[in-house]
Image (cartoon, rainbow, N blue to C red):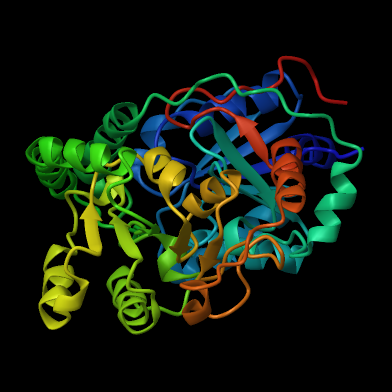
Length: 409
């Protein structure tokens, strides 16, 4: 019998420290659930005024601590806090953030459990919770036999309740977060954010993003029809990730998404069959922030033989590409999991927790253009089923995460 991670966290811990959560009120909602339903004692660390805005009031069994000192002093502070209050579990969102990397070291030193929330591996209606780390930091085996054995005792999963509401709820929460964080910056003078820390920056680029979407709407509708009418021929999908994604910064050997893109294009022009096309899909959350149009345009001018074979799209839905594409090359995007659900061959060029022999292509990229390894459908189904039972929770951080209404025993 598999014990899901939320159950394991609750049954193995009594005094829980919450670090930085996703933008919005989820950690407050989670903390209240831990206290009211599960009978735990919860400590919450706020690192900036945005954190505090969403977690400023405490229940009887909750303690809120605002950390205002330097990053350099954080490890000693956290060590003392955990020891004095007999913390037995640390929980964060985003395990690659600098403060959370320190917290992980402290948890290892004190032999406390460390838990990380993350966006769902199987989006949009799931969030992820893993012990010791998520994505490439996941400690789960990279062995198909493990998942095949585990799946023997698992029931088929029920479709999740549709929860995710798209971009706008997240944008609303983010706007409130950054307004408060910047206007009360003096309260946390030493705070170091893991991304650009300026609301005006985001508003400007969100507006550019919306404008780009409108301007490209007709062109991309035509491209969708071209795909659906099989006028594109055989094509591979190349999904690009957010330029400052931790998956890019931490879990790969490329310096940037652009470097990854150029590497794939170089391989494509040298090794791919002349009958094969490549559809490069821009990440929807990155639309206003960065463009690779000039990079691709320059590359096509240097390699005119690629004209009509390389396409750069923004808002063509991924499901359309997955229905008609032949294979996917990715850094370590969760789009790779979507491709595997469609039984599509996938090659990862970064560190990915789903890069498992017989599930993803294990040869070279040069070979992948000609003979992509077909995923073992039974093995991936077992992998998928295991995660749905173990690491995935139905919900969205920016709307609602569905937590058990009764005490977990």
